Amino acid sequence: MLLLIGVFLSLSLGRYSNDPIKVLNVLLSKLGMNVPVDPAMVGIVFNVRLPRVLASVMIGAMLSLSGAVYQSVFRNPLVSPDLLGVSSGAAVGASAAILLGAGLATRQIFAFAGGILAVLVTSLVPRLLRNRSNMMLVLSGIIVGGFLSSVLAIMKFVAEEQTQLASIVYWQLGSLASILGNELFAILPVFLVCSTLLLLLSWRINILSFGDLEARTLGVNLRQVRTIVIICASLLTASAVSISGTIGWVGLVIPHLSRLIAGSDNTRSMPVTLLIGAIFMLMIDTLARTVSTVEVPLSILTGFVGAPLYALLLYKQRTRLE
Image: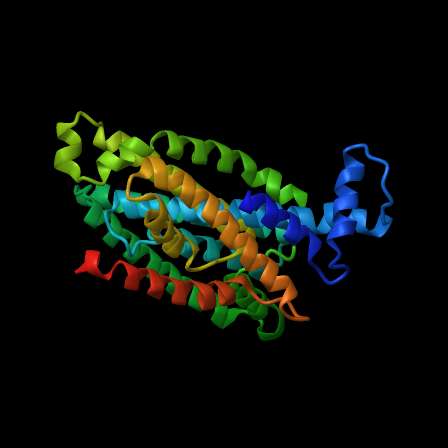
């Protein structure tokens, strides 16, 4: 109910009009009811606001769910969705497209491909070293992420200052200003398939969080389940980052808040994480386009909201942490 109310309020807020009655009439007219409708409002709701609202809901759910999965699999509450270098790879891919002068669609394809390639390289390093432990995978992600950050710095150094560099920096701050329906249809299959798989495997993720020895004792195919879970979480992160840019704090903070509400059992906390993440990102994007005459990048707002919220959650869990 909170999500539906949030969607309606977000559709009602904007620079053109802040009248919920006009939006309600537009929605009712689409259901076949005979109500007075502002023609301009129809275009604004369905062509501008609705794609953006749906994108914010999906991206919040994807980043939050992937963060919850990573924290459970790696048994580390400080893990975020970009652990395996997804965000760094996506940033390098998007920056490469900007330097080549490519359009928005190509930029998103490059970002998705860069994020997936980074995860593949991160997964390859433990195989080459013949050590497939969780710790080695985390260290591999740090190595790949650090290397890609250097590559991104080089791209910024050679970029044209007034156009290309500004585009790269703005993309890294995160925005949904240019979202259209095509982008939603592009990531919708990944969202539906990967989210469903992760929710269905939530009880196995519970077992993975016990540790490798306990999981093997309970008869879980450790390598297979871990591979499927990490691939799904990485695909969710890469898909979200490819259309929105880098957005911090969401995948780190929301899983903690969900566990505080629903407990540590992933079969209960993961669906809650999905919903709270969607609501949180919807709220952040609505603020981004209404709090000022100039649109505020999403990562700025998620930092302002996420950091104090994370500190509050740590304060509430201080006895458990001790």
